[in-house]
Image (tube, rainbow, N blue to C red; front, top):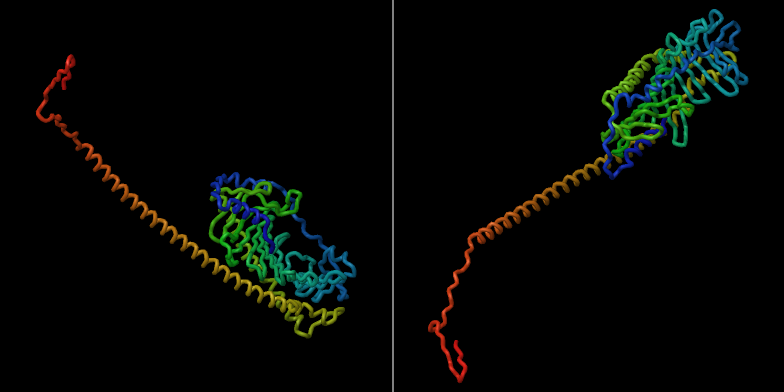
Length: 432
C-alpha cells in the first residue's frame, strides 16, 4: 500500500519524456474506446466465493458441550487448543465472550457474541492476531459475503513503525469497497472491486502531502485487472488519469504496458469519479456498521480486565494479555509520530520555499516580459520614427525631381562676331 505505484511512475515518465519540447495535442478518444478494457473485464464470469466451511471445536476449559466455530487451518496446527470465556447453551457457545485459539505457531483471540446455534457469519467480532500484530473489527451481514471490516496491522520495518488500516464494505453483488491508509503516511488508497474480482478501480489521493514539487502526482485514477491474465494480479489497463500538484491534468490510454496521452470524453471521466464517490459512500456506511463490534469490545474488556476474572487452563498473564497488548507499541508509536511530525514540518518548509521560489521566478518572468515589451515598444517607436523621416526625405526627393527643369544654354559668340580671314602664301591659301 505504501509503495509507489508502478503505473504512476510510467505515466509520469510519459508526461516528462517531452520536457522542453512542444508536446503533440492528445488524441481524442470516444466513450466506447475509453471503456473497452472495462467492458472486456466485466464480460468475465468469475465464480462466486463459497461461504467458509462450518467447523466446530470443543473448548478444553468446558466440561459440558460448548462447541466453538473454528477453521481447518487451526485444526491442522500442532498442539492446537481452544478456550471459551463465556456461557454455553444447546451444546454451543452462547452470548458475549472470548474465543481463544492457541497452537505452537499461532495465537488468535476473538471477542464476539454467539447465538447458541453455531452460526458464525452474522455475529460481530473483534479478532486479535498476537503473532502477526493484527486487530480486525468485523460485523457480518444477513448472509455471506456481506460484511463490514476494519483491519489494523502494526508494522515495524526499516522505515520505522506504522499502523496500516484497511476499511472495507462487501455487498451481496460481488462488490468490495476498500479504503487503505496509514497512521504516518499522507496517501490514501481507494479500491473498488466489482463482480467478484472481475475488475478493480484504484484511486490514490496524495493531496494531503506537502507539494514540494509542482509536478508531483496529487491524485491518480486507474483500472486494474485483478486476475492479471495468468500473471500476478492488479495489472493496469484501459485508461488512467492524473492530477498534479500544480492543478494540471494528464489522461492516458494504457495498452500492453505502454501509455500514451489521450483526451478522455467528459462522460467517461464522470463515470470514473462516480466509482470514487461510491467508495467514499461505502466507507461512511462501514464506519457506522462497525459500531456494534466496537461496543462489544468495550463491554467485554470492562469485564475481563477488572482484575477479578480468569479462565481455567490459562494463567492470569495470558488471560489478561488482551487488556494491555497494545501497550507494547506505545513507545514505537510516539517515536514514529514525532518523526512524522518533524518530516511534515520540513516538507511544509520546503513546500513554502518552493512556492516562494516559483513566485519569484514568475515575478521575474513577468518583469522580463514587461521589459521586453517595453524594449520592443521603444524599438518599434524608433523604427516608426526612422520610417517617418525616411518617408519625409523620400517625399522631398520626389518633389524635387518633379519640380526640376533643365537649365537654358546660351550660344557662345566670339568677340567681334563671326569673320573669315584668308591668307595667301605663294600657291597656298589658308582661311579661318
